[in-house]
Image 1 (cartoon, helix red, strand yellow):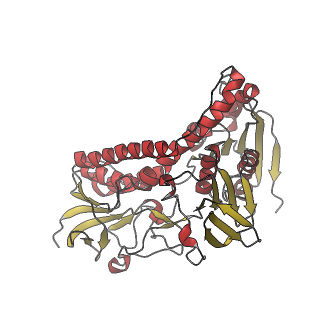
Image 2: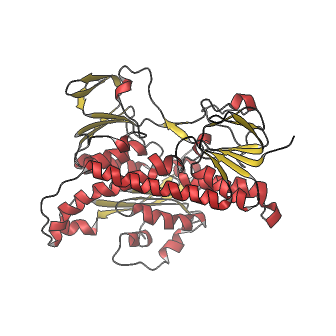
Length: 462
């Protein structure tokens, strides 16, 4: 068979554009199709606009707390539409950079939906033509989940739409207990909305360390965010005054907007996987091996569509690994695979959460003995501002090897700190390494190297 391209990438998000650019740099003929906007979820409707909105909300706290430092702050107000416009200008700029990067690398970008027509065939829908590709990379990301059987579900919004609401919601209900739900809860509360979070479980942020979960619940509750645990919506009613969310526990919650953030699903619908023989896993994601290869040897998948670790930097690295491994041999690059262990991550709530390595629960399940070092203190800024902001830091250690198993931080700057701690944990740093590092004073981060007294030792009895 004669091939038109060496690599066809479906999806112009973080993983897809990285793979395309690197493959083209290695001399491959590359075509990429994106049906919406270049940049994918992260740039267009995910982590980038989310972080901008988080920063916008934090100004309200800064205005309040400035008085404690001698500043006289006058009356303030927030213009929601101005924020939306500024956000749109920034992501449009970033989208242009993504497109420019592809063009500079020699990638042919097609603005169209693309679907599989066979093992080597990709149909460009808008042009109704088929491209024959030696290799195919699927990087279509994820999409928000919705409970389509819920009466009134048509009245809710998801994270895809919430950034561009025409009016700021003075009352908002958020369904979900993951990081997306809690980040938006903090955004809207800081911007002045009444916020309630409804979650079917007993505690949000499943999979995160228990002290991070408890610390955030406490901070959010003090900030005026209402939590309704062990409850779900059974009906959404639209009235002349707004929306009413009826819950299984009998609550009737009035709101201007209801946001559903109940998770995301791999974006595989209508992709033509069955025509190419590509298999899905039990979770509905594209099944891949450690090299991101599907059951069809020349078809690969990276990012959220594989439902491995759904983080933008992970998708980028997976895409890079595929491109290097397929086309880097001529320049001496040895095929390589992504190590998905000890990935630092952050939740951009206020206070922030930063985490790397094992949670306390996972560490105690994996090792017979685990040492805990933990501290909690009032943030220095709060001593004059009068706020009740707390910082929590936690190290989990294997006493047999002295290696750091996990680090968890709650408080201002947690994201920045955990990125650097992640380097140490990835290198196999020990508690002794932390203890022998000189503290930087005065800083919150110095507590990571001054926690000398063990808080607890957990010994498994069975």
